[in-house]
Amino acid sequence: MNNPVLLDLVSATGDLATLPTTVVRLLDLLKDSTCSASKVVKVMERDPAMTANVLKLSNSAFYGARREISSVRDALVMLGNRSVVTLAFATGMAPIMRRDLLGYGITRERFWGHSLKAATASAIAAERLGLGELRCEAFTAGLVHDIGMLVVDTHLVAQNQQIGLSDHTFGVSEQERKALGFDHTEAGAMLGEHWGFPDSLVAAIRNHHDVALAGPHRDVVRAVSAGNILAQVVDDDIDPNADELVSNTLAALAFDQEFLAQLRLDLATNLEETLARATRPSPSSAWTS
Image (cartoon, rainbow, N blue to C red; front, side, top):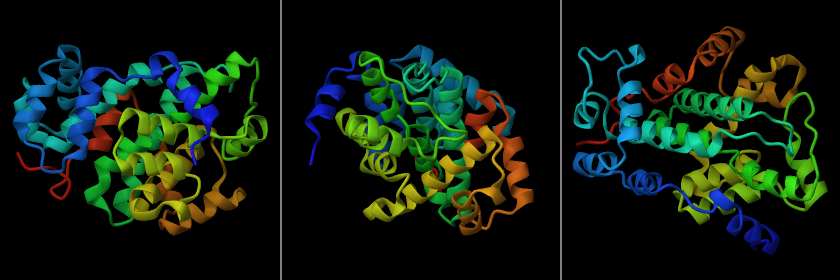
């Protein structure tokens, strides 16, 4: 049942209430697994700044392009529709998500950095779970898994409240519910529905702390749940052997210490490298043109 307080918050959260037009159109493309290249080009050509960012990312060394990618059509041919749309969505969400969360004491660099790392780790987890075809979907869901904190933060600041984080944020939902009666997963799912996110993204936002409730989108939620935990392990240098939740997650994914060490290196990169690494296409994940 919808929480009326949350409904009011989501509808009155200023610039969070609506998404940029291009991002809304990209959401429609994300929902369409048979989307044609011409539809992607039509959307991208209306936003020169986004197109420039995507072409810059597409020419990253991590994609291994044999020649310069100079147009959206070149990118679609070289990388596949799904990877291009995923890159575009990430660049479109950056201005929305790069903000300080004063109610949590989190800087914009830490929040956006965690979101990117969780997205990358979610894509890696999807592959490790044998769900390579969901790699880009897991990345996208991982990127927005904590958007509810944007809504909660607005409320905290307005009420002159603050939620202090412990050494890591695994327990933040409990603190939010004690203080407010709801948490960032509920707020984020409602915001995602308000924005028209695909059902799998809404499920990941709502259930990334409780996979058992994930329903038909359990595979994506499993990947995002793992990606979120792995990103926090890297962010806060958590000892996997000292935390049962982390240890169980690593065991479920068959991650050993060597893999975790490599993951730390993979996530210790700049924005361009992180996005390119996570969305690099594979034959099973690219849409046809």
